[in-house]
Image 1 (cartoon, rainbow, N blue to C red):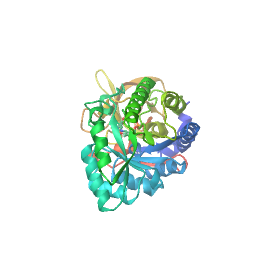
Image 2 (cartoon, rainbow, N blue to C red; image 1 turned 90 degrees about the vertical axis):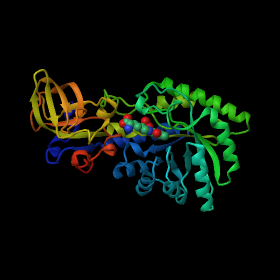
Image 3 (spheres, helix red, strand yellow; image 1 turned 135 degrees about the vertical axis):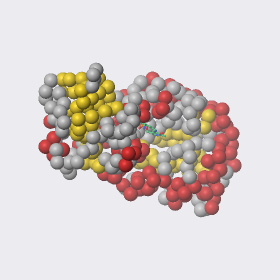
Image 4 (cartoon, helix red, strand yellow; image 1 turned 135 degrees about the horizontal axis):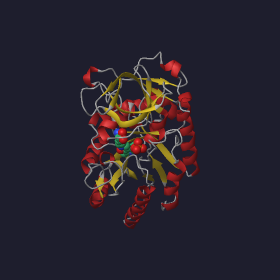
Length: 385
Ligand code: LLP
């Protein structure tokens, strides 16, 4: 059923490993997310960190989305891809001076500020350029995202955002600084969140924070809820497009939106994950005493999520129709964590078979490294292959 989805004959001529992007699926996903956001008058800034491949970025820009950047490099990549400067937000707990200056020079929409110390530096740099920087304060709402500890961001012990107890002082500071202008509040509680209850809890907390701010005479023009919507790594075919309608409905129903207030989101994974697969060749099948190893030419240098987070990615042998066998699917890197999956059901696998590792469009190619002096994986696209 799946095999028809990949142009196997074309893959056989391309040096592996490489990333393959299904551009039709990316466009369908973008049509869906923009339609659902438009219904509720929500603004979307794609989180560039998930995948900054220039073709992927320019396709996303063509659908009218803004960009969420966390570095000067990402701001430049977003501008190069055609994202309008006035739809770029810049977040990050450690913005360097040159990165702030790049944002100021390009008059980006908003700096998402994460500390009082950063606020003062931003104010000084803006003053030196005789400009006023629009800012949102990133608040740590202390909401548990119930996701992997390494991708949880909204708890007290995380390095991100301003703690609720310090918010009053930071707002006072903002009022005393003349080259920053408070236009919003920013939240982001984590990534790969599949339980809508976490987002419901976030909105309930945001309503409380809005009430407290309003009691002090502060109503911000923008609320930004960050990213985090999860995808189905188990069923990349049946659930290829995430349920953006259900996700946005949580915010639409529960949020006590103030008149004229603009609502923003920063999805990354939910837009690009399912359109990408890592394509690899089987180098060897090694019969161990208790296990069969399927040794690929792709390793954690090409896709680090299984090694780094213990993440599950569906693996398919797209060359074989033979009976199912059980394998540990591993890479060639000299580290025991270079494992894509243990006890994986694959059609009987032989040297030279092509294997697809699915749902790799987000945090795949962009997190690749050259460890072991390996080459970075190249990208191929369904419409130009
Ligand atoms: N906004 C902010 C402030 C973020 O920190 C992130 C992700 C996003 C938006 C986008 O979140 P998404 O919609 O993609 O969940 N490398 C990890 C994920 C790290 C996410 C970091 N921040 C992984 O492979 O799972």
